[in-house]
Every structure is written in C-alpha cells, then in structure tokens.
Image 1 (cartoon, protein in one colour):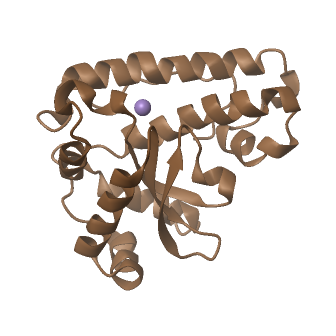
Image 2 (tube, rainbow, N blue to C red; image 1 turned 120 degrees about the vertical axis):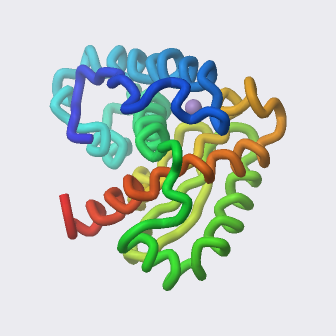
Length: 211
Ligand code: MN
C-alpha cells in the first residue's frame, strides 16, 4: 500500500471464479476490472495536473484531504477512497476462507467485541444498516480499541483518524448479479470467504508489531 501516482490496477491474487459459489465470477470481473479501474483512472486524472501530490501514497492523500487544494478534495475523497476501499476488500477475500478470526486479532475480538459470534452479529447489523451505497468496517480506533462502523459511498475510516482492518462493500454492484436485492444473503456468503490471516496482518501492521 505504499504506492503513489500513477496508480495501477494490480491483478487479483486469485482467479475471478475463486470465490464461487459465494461471490460469482462475473461480479468479480466487473467489480475489479470495471468499477475499481474507473476509480483508479479518475484518481490518476485528478492528480495528473498536481505534480506536488504525485509522490504521496494513497493513505497520505486520504488522511490529508483537508489540506489538499479545494478543487481536488472531493475527487480524492471519492476516487482515492474508492481505490483504497476496493483494494482492502479484494485483499481480504479467500476461498476457502479462514472461518474464524486469527492470531492477535482473534484475541482482541474476544476481549473487546465479545467473541466471533458477537462480532459477526454486530458486523452484519452494521452492513445491513447502510442506506444506499457504502461499507461496513472493522477498524482500530484512535484509542487503539477495535470498532465497527459504516461509511457512505467511498468514504473511508482513514479520513476519520481510524485504521481499517477489514471491510465489506455493500454497494449493489458488489452482489446484485448473484444475490439480487438480498443483501443479507450476500453478507452471509461473504463471511465464508473472509481472509482472516490478511485481516490479522492488517491489525499487526497498525500497531507496528510486524511489517
Ligand atoms: Mn465496489
């Protein structure tokens, strides 16, 4: 995630059909090759006239949105956020998934969120509560504690001073071809393909316990 302009759309680290039957091949194709690609193209277009920010990483850009020139704040929020959120989403998928949280993150979910079942219920509720398009997130808050929150559109917890560990995209484009309007069924399927090892890596990196 230390990349900067010109951002590129890396191939998925698995086949498009790898998440079947939970997330279908066609959705993965469109989601990665069309939706994410568009955010990348638009972010690059936005930064093309601003050489000053071309060495900034995605995280730097998002964290510092308020200090960017006013005319690129919203484009960076929407497109930079879109790139960041999708890269995290795709990185945290794996089939077969891990089933349960892993490592130090597992310990913290048990201590701070009442264990996996309690986390799963709260996270599902959050993901269902997103009105319109957005995400549910597992984050580390500024206090160092785990938290669950939702964001609209392509807003990210990074811009709110929190560190994302795991997210689920609940824009309709993430599930409509397979699950139609049944967001709850998509969320249930998504839990089968969560890459908890990756989520744990994200958690460790947040505290610099491991790089
Ligand atoms: Mn999406």
